[in-house]
Image (tube, rainbow, N blue to C red; front, side, top):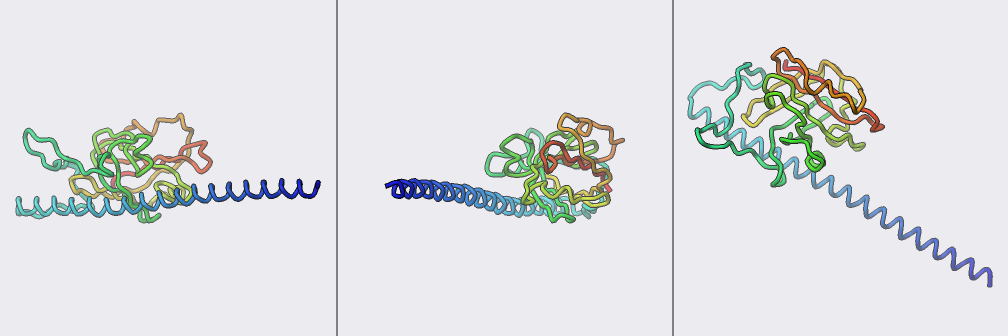
Length: 227
């Protein structure tokens, strides 16, 4: 009798364990699927964004009949915005139909390429990297802070800890201007430190990349200046 009762208890425990494992696998599978879909959509949006920039550049070239500036080393003069017509508001590309896109970030050293969203919010940084602060706008003189999650699978800024001084960061903005930035400062700091946000750049274009450290107790900050 005792053996039967013991056997039933073991059977119930086994069933509970199996159900728990199946639920866990379902959650993990959904998480992987969600990240795959987000990455696929991001790649599609990047391609669409690049095509729209190419059309803008071609239109500008046709309208002006002048040679376009070298986008790798643009002048320090302010670039014109897209659709800069009196009385009209420039339309920014949309990501997932609800986030304004400001540009694209590329870091060849870690094979990174993502859209940059206009504003960092709890929901926006779940799908891309985003601007937390910008003194004068992306690719304009002053500092622009771009934040991204540090995922263990390397998504977003998950591989930023592999970057080193001298690595390059490329930013393409809505006007089609692509600027190369050179990393010159990498450090870890506390979550309360905000000195990297509003800082003096002596009129140069700079970006600051911010993400959590691997243990989530600090912040990894990277500074880069226009080369």
